[in-house]
Image (tube, rainbow, N blue to C red; front, side):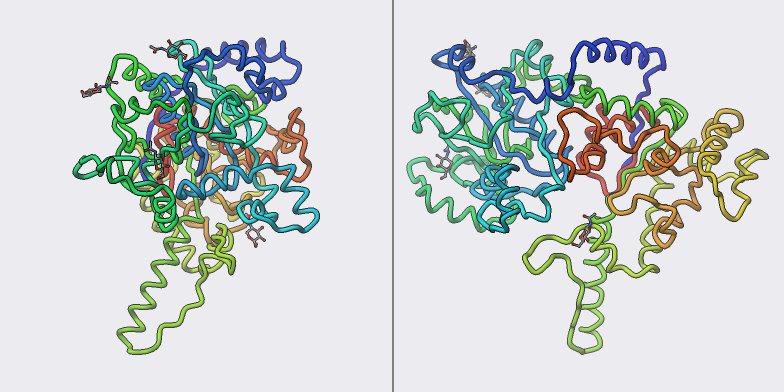
Length: 520
Ligand SMILES: *[C@@H]1O[C@H](CO)[C@@H](O)[C@H](O)[C@H]1NC(C)=O
Ligand SMILES: *[C@@H]1O[C@H](CO)[C@@H](O)[C@H](O)[C@H]1NC(C)=O
Ligand SMILES: *[C@@H]1O[C@H](CO)[C@@H](O)[C@H](O)[C@H]1NC(C)=O
Ligand SMILES: *[C@@H]1O[C@H](CO)[C@@H](O)[C@H](O)[C@H]1NC(C)=O
């Protein structure tokens, strides 16, 4: 867990920004339709593509921040190799972890919602529903990256050619965007799956190309991998590939793909760490909701954000419990039996709720107590001091002395007031978690947190009091699948925008999201 302090923009900049956004979007009848439209149609690209134009693409995996990381790496490689990046969409909601190339490609290909819906409705199980289970059909959506991020600045300032693949999931030799390529002009490159595709990590000794293993054997070997190979692709290796289309596997692990520190490359890296492809601020409805939440929390710089992935915490805790029970059984000389389950009978990992429910209330309480201790340690020092002091005479103190606070909106008002008038360091929190909407119904888990930090608010609060209309996402033009909870799926983007205007951001456990927010 790590805390970062986020620069806060001034109110005036925000309002100018909003005015610009408003002017920009009010001239477009349907924000989403326009961004869902592919950037080029096929005839266009046939006409425009020069005879030597080269291409690259990759397969996404992981959560929003992980997919974002892969695109950053893809941009770096596209710049290095002067290849047009064929960009898959971002998948929100349920996704998968790293897989060997052949499996990752199946996950990618199988995402056709219309086909899946038909199969699921007819109760037909096939290879696609194996990768995209019917019960998860409404737990994910795909959207073009340009829905959230400004890609034109990459095109214009860094001359990176980007085409978004928005209509299908055809890749490599069958890519609908490059029908003019012959199969021999396409090559697969995935150093995390195929030993021959890279140099060894430690020794950097190039694998002997003359003794290149059979592709089919390499593919068989790759299927046994549970984590990616630690091979490196050097810039020279990338540049030597003559095929006009490189289909990468995972591009999440950037250290596997070395690029030279040219002037252009350094400029791109600087931009990617400051203001380019950093803020998902191109989606009007999402911007509006996050700004409303920022305002409700007292404005930019007034609050801290906490992002808790309880499923991961519970998973770690359960593993600890299992190994402790095993040890105890060994000491006592009895047979080790355990009914803890981390995945279902089909091998699908249990979701956060299923994991948490296997921890008894005391274990949940202890888990949170430990987290509060960590949070206290990671808090900016001025806030840590403030929260440790007894509250001064105030409306906040009066409210908190009551056994139960009925009106949480008045609590937020009192918190903001206390921070403005009494102690500018007193922390206000905006919390998100992957299990419970209403944290106040679950004191077995959140009790220690709320006790330590009473000014703790959630999206649920915002929806109950009405600064945010809980149906905002259902009204977005173009997102019209009634079975999909768009609010839930878009919440990661809302959260990034809210957190980027906060005072600091904490994440437990830490993921790539913390890094993404450090650039915001
Ligand atoms: C980069 O690729 C484009 C498209 O094929 C080509 O027109 C351009 O000349 C290439 N630039 C360099 C420096 O090779
Ligand atoms: C990477 O390995 C695969 C599987 O062996 C092979 O088909 C492909 O040609 C290799 N790519 C490169 C660039 O060596
Ligand atoms: C990248 O750097 C290496 C070592 O400095 C050099 O040999 C190679 O030619 C460079 N490649 C490019 C594409 O500039
Ligand atoms: C977790 O799985 C259970 C059982 O399959 C299901 O009832 C529940 O809705 C799931 N929870 C989430 C948050 O997906």
